Image (cartoon, one colour):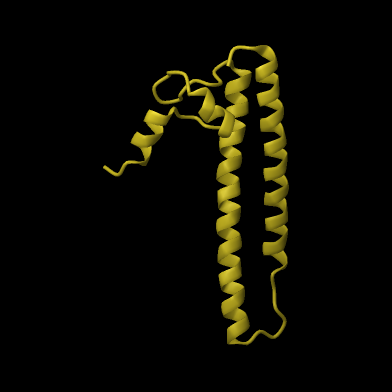
Length: 116
């Protein structure tokens, strides 16, 4: 990614994605905070527990994704956007188009996902 307008488009895309994630996180935190049942029976308690676990997992995924987006914005500001954070090689343009917050090239991503 060398062209300034391309980088501006990436910046806008990341900023929009960041805003969406922040809103999702705020919404989930609000739902988690008010998810109470008056006089619950066992079934209500079980449903509430399962719902809370799902919401907590969704919230955690959104928070992790937000960290990736914010790190990509930081790399963009520092002139390091598009370079693999592990090996330093350029990340494939196709990968960045689909996943603009990607910190790793495909090879390093495969290595990171492969169990040792």
